[in-house]
Length: 270
Ligand code: GLN
Image (cartoon, rainbow, N blue to C red):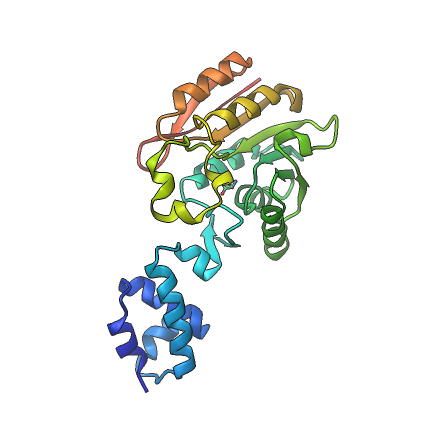
Protein backbone atom coordinates (compact mmCIF):
# COMPACT_ATOMS: atom_id res chain seq x y z
CA UNK A 1 0.00 0.00 0.00
CA UNK A 2 1.50 3.33 -1.06
CA UNK A 3 1.23 6.71 0.59
CA UNK A 4 0.11 9.78 -1.27
CA UNK A 5 3.61 11.23 -0.82
CA UNK A 6 5.30 8.28 -2.54
CA UNK A 7 2.67 8.20 -5.31
CA UNK A 8 3.15 11.92 -5.97
CA UNK A 9 6.88 11.41 -5.95
CA UNK A 10 6.87 8.58 -8.48
CA UNK A 11 4.37 10.16 -10.92
CA UNK A 12 5.68 10.77 -14.42
CA UNK A 13 3.74 14.07 -14.54
CA UNK A 14 4.97 17.51 -13.43
CA UNK A 15 4.20 17.85 -9.68
CA UNK A 16 1.45 20.46 -10.16
CA UNK A 17 -0.44 18.26 -12.63
CA UNK A 18 0.02 15.15 -10.49
CA UNK A 19 -1.46 17.06 -7.52
CA UNK A 20 -4.40 18.31 -9.62
CA UNK A 21 -5.20 14.77 -10.76
CA UNK A 22 -4.95 13.39 -7.23
CA UNK A 23 -7.28 16.14 -5.98
CA UNK A 24 -9.72 15.10 -8.70
CA UNK A 25 -9.44 11.37 -7.99
CA UNK A 26 -9.83 11.78 -4.21
CA UNK A 27 -12.33 14.65 -4.45
CA UNK A 28 -10.30 16.78 -2.03
CA UNK A 29 -8.92 20.32 -1.89
CA UNK A 30 -5.32 21.32 -2.53
CA UNK A 31 -4.91 22.13 1.17
CA UNK A 32 -6.16 18.66 2.17
CA UNK A 33 -3.75 17.01 -0.24
CA UNK A 34 -0.77 18.91 1.17
CA UNK A 35 -1.78 18.25 4.78
CA UNK A 36 -2.45 14.52 4.29
CA UNK A 37 0.43 13.28 2.15
CA UNK A 38 1.06 10.44 4.61
CA UNK A 39 -2.39 9.01 3.75
CA UNK A 40 -2.36 5.43 2.46
CA UNK A 41 -4.26 5.27 -0.84
CA UNK A 42 -6.60 2.45 -1.91
CA UNK A 43 -5.29 0.39 -4.85
CA UNK A 44 -8.54 1.15 -6.77
CA UNK A 45 -7.86 4.88 -6.46
CA UNK A 46 -4.32 4.31 -7.68
CA UNK A 47 -5.74 2.56 -10.73
CA UNK A 48 -8.11 5.44 -11.45
CA UNK A 49 -5.17 7.84 -11.12
CA UNK A 50 -2.99 5.76 -13.47
CA UNK A 51 -5.70 5.82 -16.16
CA UNK A 52 -5.97 9.63 -15.99
CA UNK A 53 -2.19 9.98 -15.88
CA UNK A 54 -1.91 7.88 -19.07
CA UNK A 55 -4.37 10.20 -20.83
CA UNK A 56 -2.34 13.24 -19.76
CA UNK A 57 0.92 11.59 -20.84
CA UNK A 58 -0.69 11.00 -24.27
CA UNK A 59 -1.13 14.79 -24.51
CA UNK A 60 -4.82 15.19 -23.68
CA UNK A 61 -5.47 18.66 -22.19
CA UNK A 62 -5.86 18.77 -18.42
CA UNK A 63 -9.23 20.59 -18.82
CA UNK A 64 -10.78 17.62 -20.68
CA UNK A 65 -9.41 15.12 -18.14
CA UNK A 66 -10.73 17.14 -15.19
CA UNK A 67 -13.87 18.19 -17.11
CA UNK A 68 -13.56 21.79 -15.94
CA UNK A 69 -11.65 25.02 -16.67
CA UNK A 70 -11.72 28.28 -14.77
CA UNK A 71 -12.63 31.38 -16.75
CA UNK A 72 -13.32 34.85 -15.29
CA UNK A 73 -13.21 33.25 -11.82
CA UNK A 74 -16.03 30.80 -12.63
CA UNK A 75 -15.70 27.04 -13.05
CA UNK A 76 -16.94 26.01 -16.51
CA UNK A 77 -17.69 22.45 -17.51
CA UNK A 78 -15.75 21.50 -20.65
CA UNK A 79 -16.04 18.43 -22.84
CA UNK A 80 -14.37 17.55 -26.15
CA UNK A 81 -17.44 19.18 -27.80
CA UNK A 82 -16.15 22.64 -26.86
CA UNK A 83 -13.03 24.74 -27.15
CA UNK A 84 -11.24 25.07 -23.80
CA UNK A 85 -11.74 28.71 -22.72
CA UNK A 86 -8.47 30.67 -22.93
CA UNK A 87 -7.21 33.41 -20.60
CA UNK A 88 -6.84 35.85 -23.52
CA UNK A 89 -10.60 35.64 -24.10
CA UNK A 90 -11.15 37.22 -20.67
CA UNK A 91 -10.05 40.47 -22.30
CA UNK A 92 -13.05 40.33 -24.64
CA UNK A 93 -15.38 39.80 -21.66
CA UNK A 94 -13.76 42.67 -19.73
CA UNK A 95 -14.13 44.93 -22.76
CA UNK A 96 -17.82 43.96 -23.09
CA UNK A 97 -18.51 44.51 -19.40
CA UNK A 98 -16.88 47.95 -19.56
CA UNK A 99 -18.99 48.89 -22.60
CA UNK A 100 -22.16 47.71 -20.86
CA UNK A 101 -21.54 49.46 -17.55
CA UNK A 102 -24.13 52.15 -17.08
CA UNK A 103 -26.15 50.76 -19.99
CA UNK A 104 -29.50 49.60 -18.60
CA UNK A 105 -30.93 46.37 -20.05
CA UNK A 106 -28.69 46.11 -23.12
CA UNK A 107 -29.20 43.32 -25.65
CA UNK A 108 -25.98 41.33 -26.08
CA UNK A 109 -25.18 38.55 -28.57
CA UNK A 110 -22.32 36.00 -28.36
CA UNK A 111 -21.81 34.19 -31.66
CA UNK A 112 -20.28 30.69 -31.53
CA UNK A 113 -20.57 30.45 -27.77
CA UNK A 114 -18.94 27.00 -27.35
CA UNK A 115 -18.81 26.32 -23.60
CA UNK A 116 -20.74 29.56 -23.06
CA UNK A 117 -17.67 31.08 -21.37
CA UNK A 118 -18.17 34.56 -22.87
CA UNK A 119 -21.99 34.74 -22.73
CA UNK A 120 -22.26 33.34 -19.21
CA UNK A 121 -19.46 35.56 -17.86
CA UNK A 122 -21.08 38.67 -19.35
CA UNK A 123 -24.50 37.69 -17.98
CA UNK A 124 -23.02 37.17 -14.50
CA UNK A 125 -21.11 40.47 -14.55
CA UNK A 126 -24.03 42.45 -16.03
CA UNK A 127 -27.26 40.99 -14.64
CA UNK A 128 -29.19 43.87 -16.19
CA UNK A 129 -28.14 42.80 -19.72
CA UNK A 130 -30.22 40.40 -21.85
CA UNK A 131 -27.70 37.92 -23.23
CA UNK A 132 -28.35 35.71 -26.26
CA UNK A 133 -25.84 33.12 -27.52
CA UNK A 134 -25.72 30.93 -30.60
CA UNK A 135 -23.71 27.93 -31.71
CA UNK A 136 -24.01 25.58 -34.65
CA UNK A 137 -23.04 22.57 -32.53
CA UNK A 138 -25.75 20.81 -30.50
CA UNK A 139 -23.06 19.24 -28.30
CA UNK A 140 -21.56 22.65 -27.51
CA UNK A 141 -24.97 24.14 -26.71
CA UNK A 142 -25.64 21.32 -24.26
CA UNK A 143 -22.42 22.24 -22.40
CA UNK A 144 -23.22 25.99 -22.60
CA UNK A 145 -26.74 25.44 -21.24
CA UNK A 146 -25.34 23.33 -18.40
CA UNK A 147 -22.83 26.06 -17.53
CA UNK A 148 -25.47 28.81 -17.57
CA UNK A 149 -27.70 26.76 -15.26
CA UNK A 150 -24.89 25.67 -12.93
CA UNK A 151 -23.54 29.21 -12.59
CA UNK A 152 -26.95 30.85 -12.34
CA UNK A 153 -26.70 32.97 -15.50
CA UNK A 154 -29.74 33.94 -17.55
CA UNK A 155 -28.68 33.35 -21.17
CA UNK A 156 -30.98 32.56 -24.11
CA UNK A 157 -29.44 29.95 -26.43
CA UNK A 158 -30.23 29.25 -30.09
CA UNK A 159 -28.75 26.57 -32.33
CA UNK A 160 -27.62 27.54 -35.80
CA UNK A 161 -24.83 29.06 -37.85
CA UNK A 162 -23.95 32.61 -36.75
CA UNK A 163 -27.03 34.84 -37.19
CA UNK A 164 -29.21 32.13 -38.79
CA UNK A 165 -30.10 30.85 -35.35
CA UNK A 166 -31.69 34.12 -34.21
CA UNK A 167 -35.36 35.03 -34.16
CA UNK A 168 -36.11 37.40 -37.07
CA UNK A 169 -35.94 41.12 -36.34
CA UNK A 170 -33.97 40.78 -33.08
CA UNK A 171 -31.28 43.52 -32.82
CA UNK A 172 -28.49 44.09 -30.30
CA UNK A 173 -26.47 46.79 -28.54
CA UNK A 174 -23.33 44.66 -28.56
CA UNK A 175 -22.19 41.60 -30.53
CA UNK A 176 -19.12 39.66 -29.40
CA UNK A 177 -17.47 36.55 -30.78
CA UNK A 178 -14.37 34.40 -30.48
CA UNK A 179 -14.86 32.41 -33.70
CA UNK A 180 -12.62 29.71 -35.24
CA UNK A 181 -9.72 31.65 -36.74
CA UNK A 182 -6.76 29.34 -37.25
CA UNK A 183 -5.87 28.95 -40.94
CA UNK A 184 -6.23 25.35 -42.11
CA UNK A 185 -2.54 25.07 -43.05
CA UNK A 186 -1.31 26.20 -39.61
CA UNK A 187 0.90 23.38 -38.23
CA UNK A 188 -0.30 24.15 -34.67
CA UNK A 189 -3.60 22.43 -35.53
CA UNK A 190 -1.86 19.05 -35.37
CA UNK A 191 0.22 19.82 -32.27
CA UNK A 192 -0.36 20.03 -28.51
CA UNK A 193 -3.77 20.68 -26.99
CA UNK A 194 -5.32 21.68 -30.33
CA UNK A 195 -5.23 18.05 -31.53
CA UNK A 196 -7.90 17.25 -28.94
CA UNK A 197 -10.22 20.23 -29.47
CA UNK A 198 -13.14 20.26 -31.95
CA UNK A 199 -11.72 21.24 -35.37
CA UNK A 200 -14.85 23.30 -36.13
CA UNK A 201 -14.10 25.47 -33.07
CA UNK A 202 -10.52 26.11 -34.20
CA UNK A 203 -10.45 26.58 -37.96
CA UNK A 204 -12.71 27.67 -40.79
CA UNK A 205 -11.01 25.10 -43.04
CA UNK A 206 -9.72 28.01 -45.13
CA UNK A 207 -7.60 31.14 -44.45
CA UNK A 208 -8.86 31.76 -40.90
CA UNK A 209 -10.92 34.83 -41.85
CA UNK A 210 -14.17 33.26 -43.11
CA UNK A 211 -15.95 33.59 -39.76
CA UNK A 212 -15.08 37.32 -39.60
CA UNK A 213 -16.38 37.82 -43.16
CA UNK A 214 -19.75 36.34 -42.15
CA UNK A 215 -19.93 37.91 -38.70
CA UNK A 216 -18.98 41.41 -39.90
CA UNK A 217 -21.13 41.29 -43.06
CA UNK A 218 -24.20 40.20 -41.07
CA UNK A 219 -23.67 42.58 -38.16
CA UNK A 220 -25.23 45.83 -39.46
CA UNK A 221 -28.63 44.11 -39.85
CA UNK A 222 -28.40 42.87 -36.26
CA UNK A 223 -27.09 45.98 -34.51
CA UNK A 224 -29.06 48.97 -33.23
CA UNK A 225 -27.78 52.31 -34.47
CA UNK A 226 -24.53 53.24 -32.69
CA UNK A 227 -24.13 49.66 -31.40
CA UNK A 228 -20.79 47.80 -31.25
CA UNK A 229 -19.12 44.64 -32.48
CA UNK A 230 -15.95 43.21 -30.88
CA UNK A 231 -14.20 40.00 -31.91
CA UNK A 232 -11.17 38.06 -30.74
CA UNK A 233 -8.70 37.04 -33.46
CA UNK A 234 -5.30 35.47 -34.10
CA UNK A 235 -1.94 37.18 -33.48
CA UNK A 236 -1.59 38.39 -37.09
CA UNK A 237 -5.23 39.09 -38.04
CA UNK A 238 -5.88 42.54 -36.49
CA UNK A 239 -5.31 44.41 -39.74
CA UNK A 240 -7.47 42.09 -41.85
CA UNK A 241 -10.31 42.17 -39.31
CA UNK A 242 -10.15 45.99 -39.00
CA UNK A 243 -10.34 46.29 -42.79
CA UNK A 244 -13.47 44.09 -42.84
CA UNK A 245 -15.03 46.24 -40.10
CA UNK A 246 -14.30 49.52 -41.93
CA UNK A 247 -15.62 48.11 -45.21
CA UNK A 248 -18.89 47.21 -43.46
CA UNK A 249 -19.27 50.80 -42.23
CA UNK A 250 -17.97 50.47 -38.67
CA UNK A 251 -16.47 53.59 -37.10
CA UNK A 252 -13.78 54.12 -34.42
CA UNK A 253 -12.33 50.76 -35.47
CA UNK A 254 -9.44 49.79 -33.20
CA UNK A 255 -7.54 46.82 -31.75
CA UNK A 256 -6.54 46.00 -28.18
CA UNK A 257 -3.45 44.07 -27.03
CA UNK A 258 -3.59 41.04 -24.75
CA UNK A 259 -1.27 40.62 -21.74
CA UNK A 260 1.49 39.42 -24.08
CA UNK A 261 1.19 42.65 -26.10
CA UNK A 262 -0.40 40.89 -29.10
CA UNK A 263 -3.33 42.68 -30.79
CA UNK A 264 -6.07 40.22 -29.88
CA UNK A 265 -9.39 42.02 -30.06
CA UNK A 266 -10.76 44.37 -32.69
CA UNK A 267 -14.02 46.20 -32.92
CA UNK A 268 -15.90 49.37 -33.55
CA UNK A 269 -19.41 50.82 -33.63
CA UNK A 270 -21.91 51.72 -36.28
N1 GLN B 1 -16.78 31.41 -27.41
C1 GLN B 1 -16.10 30.26 -26.89
C2 GLN B 1 -14.82 30.67 -26.21
O1 GLN B 1 -14.31 31.74 -26.41
C3 GLN B 1 -15.84 29.24 -28.00
C4 GLN B 1 -14.98 29.76 -29.07
C5 GLN B 1 -14.78 28.76 -30.20
O2 GLN B 1 -15.23 27.62 -30.12
N2 GLN B 1 -14.09 29.20 -31.23
O3 GLN B 1 -14.25 29.94 -25.43
